Length: 239
Image 1 (cartoon, one colour):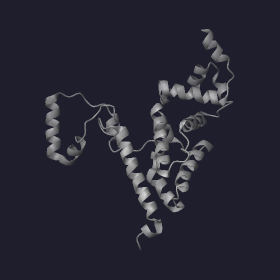
Image 2: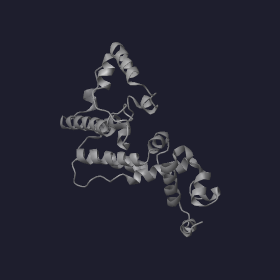
Image 3: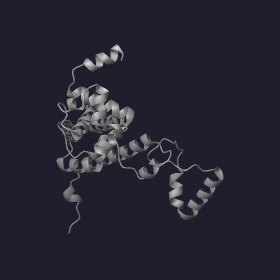
């Protein structure tokens, strides 16, 4: 054992150290590899030592989400509401991209910790500070959904996560011909852009571009509704 490793093991254990180590372990080995036993091994302690700082695995995951939330930039002082919201969402997205497991964990959480609630409250506050009514802000939050955390459900997400079967150019040409005959509109849209293989939106689509494109559409729409004095009462059809 090196002197450096021994020195790390002698650092007093606390909640921040446990959570930081859990984030690093998930980053390096994946969220499925995270367990209280494995985390204790990484910290050089017995598993029971962890329970003085986190009650169980669920509380550990909640705390890891808090670490991610803590990485998101605060609202930019003096910026207009649109810029402040856009920058904050893109900061949240950068945090999620640094931690590939974070989206899965965020989607699994049913408990709202003070850190999560604080972020949501501050996020809502950017719209209210920009002059949005509580009514419009309520519907804005529904429209944004998970985008406030830097991700969104994508049309082709499930299929993109499956590894494509290797094909020859001849086989691919036949596949395109069949698609063109049976599903011409899908093919036209799917081949409309130059693609990169690392995408999760659709094979080769620029994920960041697509995320920002949709975000800007939403922000533009929110701004228009705000300027028009939109209210949900006026928008609801008469029965």
